Structure formats: structure tokens, C-alpha cells
Length: 242
Image (tube, rainbow, N blue to C red; front, side, top):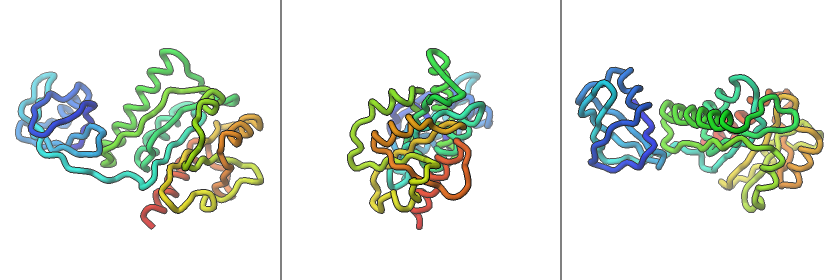
């Protein structure tokens, strides 16, 4: 069993698992002497031996950390106008499994889901927890960051110059080019931007292009808003092992 522990771990030390991890371990009925694998997001797995299991506490002793390399060779961040209902939950989970480095939720003019204040904070925490759980399942030792929901225009205006990174706008426009023509062979960072169910408005697409995003097409079929970013991630992942 792999469990995420959001604190810096040190070899040979004892610690009480945080509440979420402790509950997970108790549900799995761990006993003293059982072994677990913990990770803190630093890129290592820590073997741990269960010392004691109480009503609300699980104490473990850490062994020697082992470096884990299950990341994509290039950092891929996805920014998207949030899909409605539970689709954002599934997208965060699957994007984490596919190796995303970060997820930036956005609100565009045609967005159905809009967040602000305490509700936005709760959603961010919820999606971050989904990313952590997906890392536990898929074996990643680095947890992608899920950003706070932002207005698309505000986010675009705050972006630094593109530099060596590749910025891709998932678009249905006639001048959109195939993905293979826009992603360089070297492992430079990639940032993708996609719209909501109704797509970005012409003004939003124009603003994205001014910010350095190049329109990319993903084939002859129209993909759902929550499918398109995953298709890019899957393609980049396959290129890494080809």
C-alpha cells in the first residue's frame, strides 16, 4: 500500500500518519509489523514498518528512501476552462495518471462552472486530494499541483513570456496544425490551453494567440472538453517511450 504524507520524511524516524492516511491504513486493516510505502512528493518512496495501530493513530518507522522515476521526460501543464458536473474530478485523476505536472482550472465566457470564495477553495482542495490519491494508485512520487480557479483573461495577462516552453491552444480553427508538427523533439516544457463545452470565444482565442499559444488540431473528430487535454498527455507519454 502506498500512502501520501504531506510532510518532509526522514530515514529512521518514527511518525504518526496524518488523519487521511491513517484512516486509509485502518480500513485496509494494517497490523504492527506490516510494511507500507510512503511518499511526500519529493520524488522518493519510503518503506515504512507499522509499529502500532490505535483507534485514531497509526505509528510507523521509516526506512531508507528509494528514488522513483515515473515522470514524463518533459513537464506538461494543462490549463482548461473547467467542465461541469463530475467531469473535472475525472480529468484531474486521469491527467495525474498520465503524468501531468500541473493543472490550472479556468473560467471563460462560455463556462458553465464558476467558482469564487470559499467554494473555490474547497474545490481546489478537493481536486488536489484527487491528484494525491491518483499518485498513490499509479506509483508517481511527485504530486501535480492543482491551481486555484482563475478568470481566463486574468490568467493569460499574468503569464510570463513563453521562453523555451511550447504553448498549445487546442482549437478547431482551420489553421490549427497537427500536434506532431508543433511539439519539438527535445524535452522542453509544454503548456496546453483548452476551452469549455462550448469552446472559447473568438476574442479569447485571439488573446491566447497573443500570449504565444499556437492552435493545434487533434484529428478529424470533435473531442469533449475534458477529453482533449488527456489526448495530448497520452500522445506525449507515448512519444517518451517510442
